[in-house]
View 1 (cartoon, one colour):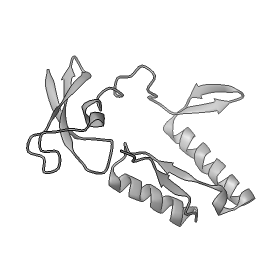
View 2: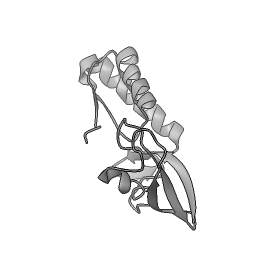
View 3: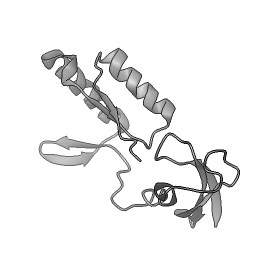
View 4: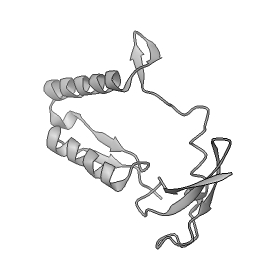
Length: 133
């Protein structure tokens, strides 16, 4: 077994714990005892944070709907398609036709950049975040 110190992906508190790994697979967590916020404790989400890593239904690459079928794509292809579609919607229906929803699995800094992209690039305040505890 090995351990890797990580920051919990579920909220902005920034608690840390060790991912327990066995044979290259995440199998559990151990709270970090010297973290100033969590102080050796975790919430129920933190205790289960390792489960999504190896989940069989977890997407590991972008998927694109192509002619009614969903297929695997490269990150560049997926990003280009997203940009093309967002700009098309903005042009046809205006800035407020767009909404940007972000994930608590991102860092606060990544969520900040996401919000800045929505507001500065696409000129919309339709931004939300799923950090609900």
